[in-house]
Image (spheres, rainbow, N blue to C red):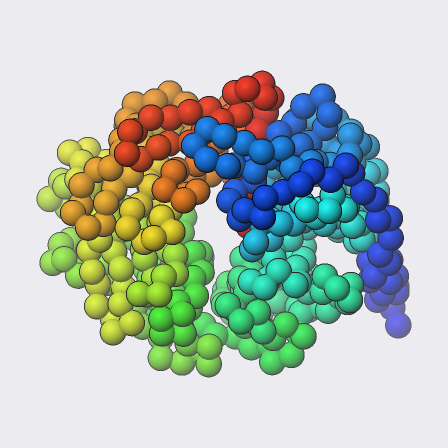
Length: 431
């Protein structure tokens, strides 16, 4: 056994130790599954549950010796605000933190106030299983599944051939799909892999070089599982508007067979100079794709389309501009009737922000915040309200710092700073 193997085995043995169950003062929770927000204040990191428009309920928090790296100093430092993730029922919060050379996984119970600590060798951003009974712990090139009840840890990738990233659980939580590096033959491409929860039956699903032009970028992003037809949809391109003027959308089944391309502007008998996909989300009617189309005739669109299980494209929302406006984020409402979109009102990346809410039924604008100078990040839906954060700089990567959490009420088009009374830094916790 070589020295590297000994180091890895020692690290794994250390990781499997579970210890240090502490308990903060528990606050009775009403059992709601609405969003949680985190607030940094004099008492450390506190959690609140959104009750109704502009209303919060305190539900406890972390001990005072926890802080966010780059925002607050403390004994245990969490790598960023996005590192705290909520379980599917939003009754637990998982995150990793480091103290000197020590790393640990923490799971906070909202109802009990319990904080479970497990030693780990590397910082990770956990990903909850759909049933809330396991966490995917990915620190590429390694990835593991951590069982909540048994504390069992299972390695599901192997370095260096499969550098894991972009992991997603299948809805039944029996397997995961992710991006890995294929080193079997040149050129080395990022491809999609699938692996069972116990690490078995790991195999590649895609062969990107065979489906896109030789001069196209082969990065893969926006992996989305469609329960409507049991296929994985994904985008090839993903580098942005100037460097990569076209994104390609494909789908593949779990056997890696029957790859299909989804045509975007050509579906509407148009030619585009730029086609950039912002995101895809799964619905029972098939994946919903939000993208920007800058057409050669000078028209510019933000569009939302639904790809039916039969392979048909249905236009759900179409917003037209006379000049290009880059589209940064989009979220579909829980009832699949609205879309919230964030983009720029001009070509300057430090320009003003456009937050738009559109109706699918009649293609009309339900709410429009155009021209705000606030930097808007991490939009989401809470019932029929849109949640968003304002930050100190544009939210590219993880460099921005949250300032406040807001709600946009769709019927009145009014906004409220729901964290204003707390007077502290706050942000929404996502799953």
